[in-house]
Length: 130
Length: 193
Image (cartoon, rainbow over all chains, first blue to last red; front, side, top):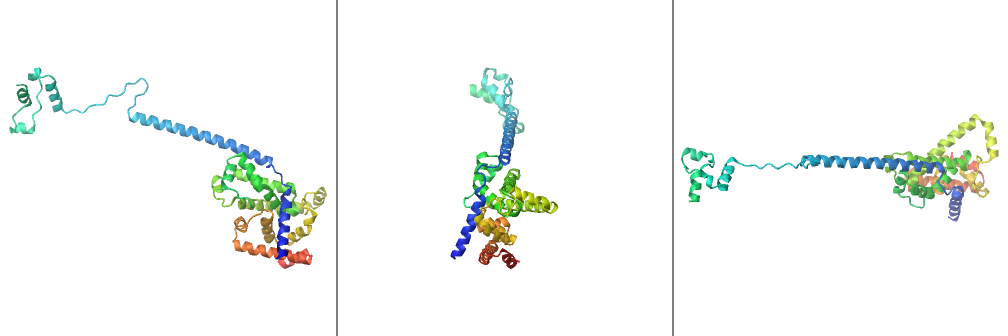
């Protein structure tokens, strides 16, 4: 057992002696390669960053177009209001009760046409004013 | 390797991090040079070993990300690279020696390609005994004692079973002991073959 320990200890010592004269500083060619690789990595990083920035700008532009954000010097678009013809007629009557005679009539409904509901808006409005 | 080498250190080195590259070298460089010197004892000195290790370290920079991501153990992976590169270097040198037998004597005279180049006389017997081992056993001894790998790391490095590695190592130690006892290196080689 001691002989074996002695042999492994000698082998360890041989291994150490083989590596004892190794330079502490890494070889110049290797470090040159590391420096070159660093440059390559930096270039890759900056290209990727530029691409990412371009992609973000493109996404923002597309999104702003879709949502109607005005460009420089352009007036913002006015949202269109949905209005039924009957609602419009009612609004004009309520806003100007004096011109009630000129107020447009609501289009007759199917029920009115059939004679079940003969009351027209004009008459109904008259009742309200009286 | 006795010191744990973080996988992130390898990745940072590959990305060109100066500090990471220096740390990686400080941890693994000397051990890998020792391994290269051990593996190329008959065909290479200090400079050849340094060249081999430098080539392997430079490969870290050239390797693609997926290869590096697949590395299980950094020390074992680099040791495998050093082993393969040393064998290639060894083969190339042997071919060159065969072609120019006369110049080999000159290079030995210059110093640097001798079998004991860079190693003290106190280990000459042990070196001779190691040289007498079959290559498959010798490299395990070197991976264990020069590169400082564990059996698990050697198994990864040689792409073999851990128990096979352990039994080969035990066999190598047995042969080395017998060789030392008999004092005859040639006998050890005969036992192996």
